Image 1: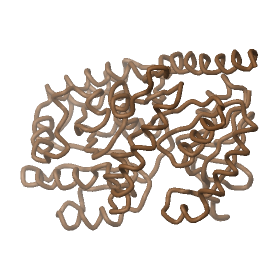
Image 2: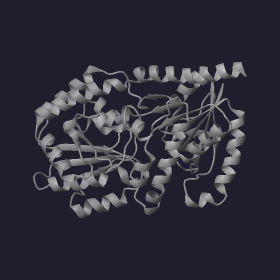
Image 3: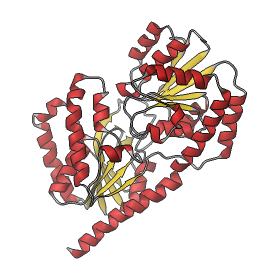
Image 4: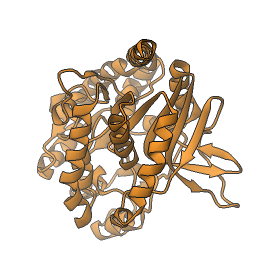
Length: 396
């Protein structure tokens, strides 16, 4: 079976090979194991000849790629979208089914084409278009937010197979039709749990001195991860103790945040740790933290937060998206109330007993996101989708 997998993700290409952090071959092979062959329709960036690509390999057996120019811009309405739709229509005819990740412009366009052509398709709803656009940081994105919300909502209503990365939030925001078969399943990939991780965390908390290390994972080029909120909040704690570090892990330009740190008087406390390979390197980074902060203005089901919880890391998060589905309600603050965030950090920072409790709560909650458990649910749903296609083909 040939399946077209569509998303706006930007892959890195060099010397005929394709690389990506979120979509390594290990991730894409999950689709291959069920559907035999997938073609990824996405965007790409050609690496410079002297550039060292430090990303997992995405290309591999039974995975092929087609790259198109981005249509996530106003200028794309002047001819580019029409050209893309013609190309996508030809592609869709050649495949048995489509899997589209939304919100993404290529995904939404392909889903619309598949629906029009009565081609079987499944949607993977991995975020809220409204929240992402409204909090992106530009007036153009805010104008576009209601249009993207409407497009995703309409697309979900028309689809017969939908997966959501949340348990409740996205389902409520983008409900499926009564005929639609839907499942909530995170796309986080956690290894099997080891009780030693929790033991090490408990020992770290018990042996902790006065210094506190906070951390956040997030792309620096988007404004809705709340990194500036965390910096402003930690700056207010400085009068109590200057003995803290705030580490940010993620791609993007850090200049604006460095300037903010200087302005707030915490330049010596803030560290930008760049990008690390997924897996062991990220887990080691999380193990170095005392408290993980997720002050997002928009979020679906935060993969980074779940990974932090799997390391037994005490965490504080905002009230947006799927974050309240993950954390102890005592560790949630209203994203419009920075004072509440400040109080939570202060309370958790100065209470080892509370940190120990949260470490255990988070570790145990993260057990629900182990790879083996999620893979079993995901594969069963995909097989149902695949077998339905075969049943329809056998009748026709």
